[in-house]
Amino acid sequence: MIRLKVKELLEENGKTKYWLYKQLGMSYQNFSRMINNETKSIRYENIETLCLLFNCTPNELFEINDE
Image (cartoon, rainbow, N blue to C red):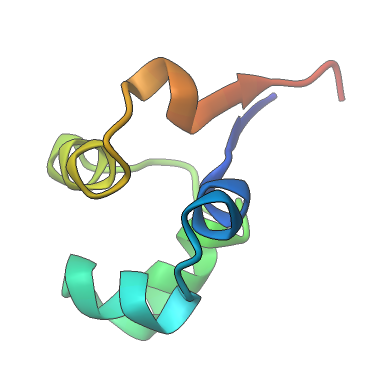
C-alpha cells in the first residue's frame, strides 16, 4: 500500500495541518481524507504543490508499506 507522508513532513518543517489546508485551497473533507490516507487518488497539481511547499520530491512524499 502506498502512503502519503504529509503528517511527518509537517512535523519536520514545524507546520500545522491548518497551514497546509490553507496553502492547498481544497475542501476540508478532501484535505482530511488526503492527509489521513483515506483517498484513492491525488491530483498531480496537489503533488506538485506539496513538493514545492515542503521543498521535496514526490519520492519523499510517499512510502510503500506491506499492509
